Amino acid sequence: MPIAVAQLARAAGCLGLMAVVGATQADEILVAVAANFAAPMARLADPFTAATGHTLKLASGATGKFYSQIVAGAPFEVLLSADDETPQRLITEGHAVAGSAFTYAVGQLVLWSATPGFVDAQGAVLASGRFQKLAIANPKTAPYGRAAMEVLAVRGLTAALSPKLVTGESVAQAHQFVATGNAELGFVALSQVSAPSKAPAGSMWRVPVALYKPIRQDAVLLKTGAGKPAAAALLQWLRSEPAQAVIRSYGYERG
Image 1 (cartoon, rainbow, N blue to C red):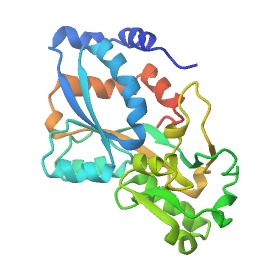
Image 2 (image 1 turned 90 degrees about the vertical axis):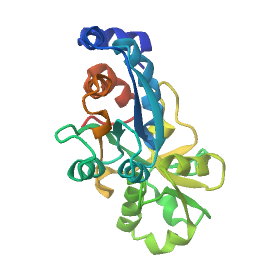
Image 3 (image 1 turned 30 degrees about the horizontal axis):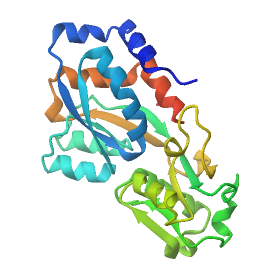
């Protein structure tokens, strides 16, 4: 059962996060959120504010695009990445705080169709020839897109399906292509099609993790947020059991 917002806030108080407010003034922080994590983060925002007094301004998109924006001087203070490579790269290049990165979630790739019964439990539909368009996130900028291409390579379908690929800027756009019927099926994140307490719509294949590199999603404190209690409180909150319970309810595993 999903944890109610009020319960999350009370549990966070038990963890001592309310102490942050007593020592510092409430603040707002700008958070760059990987597209696949937009829904869970939106659900966590109110309990975080209730627990700490701080508020979040969220922007969601492709991790690769966020990297480029951060390097160019975008004022994000925390990055919730869709991989573990981008945060480390930002640390190495001096744009993020050393030692601040940690895995807040491990993502699950699924092959999904908005049509019930279209995708089978083994993903055999990929080799069936029964579709014209397969949506994926841009593998150059989105970890879920890279994972999708790894699956096609393992299945020996890269050459056959490349002409059918419809590439979205992020996994959110790949999901949109399928949801609107512009593609019959697509590789998306489990969190996009399996919300807490709701039965998944359409049909899907949960891709075995052996077919792609684990999608370890890391959070990192960016240099713009260094020294800001609100940013530190958010990173602490994401590690807490109440927050992790919500994250797991969307189909993620704990890092």
